[in-house]
Image 1 (tube, one colour):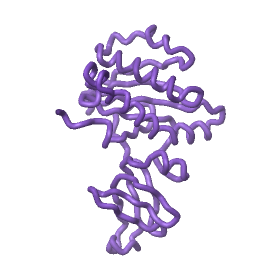
Image 2 (cartoon, one colour):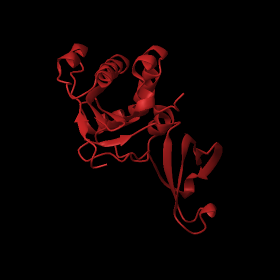
Image 3 (cartoon, rainbow, N blue to C red):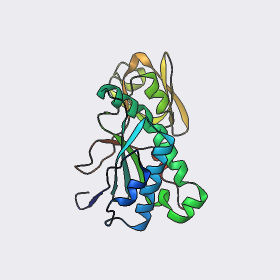
Image 4 (cartoon, rainbow, N blue to C red):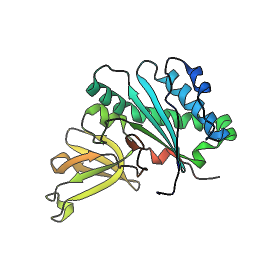
Length: 214
């Protein structure tokens, strides 16, 4: 909401993990500062020489992680970063769900972790993008000619199972739905509603980023 205060993180030097300690994080609490260090070290060690951590922002009950690719070509960088978002999101969730880390920080119960990249508009087009986003929520826009649509354009929301040569398969409330490609107008990730100034489009694996409280 407009009343929420955005607390911007810092831009980190990917060549030196110790740089994180030098930034002024006085506006963050101890839990957020420790989470920042974990996020930075995880991206540096797990995606070395391929992904750069640009920013970490804490907005209400969301942690927004902005990344970019190391590619010198802007188009290649955007595609590479977009293809890596799913892997980054899953890796961060694994780190914060580690029993020792969870007992200390309790991040996944308190915050929704979102990973963003500059320039990626959320549309899935290439095979790599569909592979990277398996298991994530997607929106499939379909043509009104699709028999189930009864003459109207319709958008189906579900968890992406796979894209084959002839169909997109979604998990919709536990049931597998097969949508023929000749009726598919486009597939994209749902946009998260974030405050002005977040620096890019943000997408989340909401099925994994927050667990039910015990």
